[in-house]
Length: 118
Image 1 (cartoon, one colour):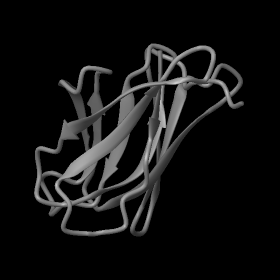
Image 2 (cartoon, rainbow, N blue to C red):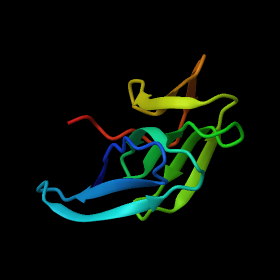
Image 3 (cartoon, one colour):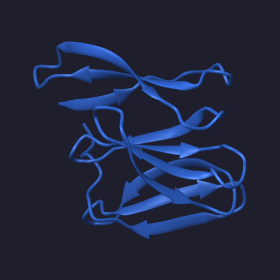
């Protein structure tokens, strides 16, 4: 099962809508991931196991990246000293997480791979 986040333009929305898509690209179910901070996520990427990595433009202390399972459970957090605007997986094995922040670019090698494009 693959997760495809749906962009939300309303800055006051406190949930991340996502649609679950099967192998045949048939829509299986829709659900909401509960967001744990009062700000909307900005960039989102999935890894090969279906986890959703969301950048957080929340106040400092919560700024960074949050990682959710396909079931919507928060399983990880990467805290940054400034607001994180977007993120992507890169490198030859897609095991490096690049995070763009308000004034910096951060890179972290992770123990998973980003989902392949296409």
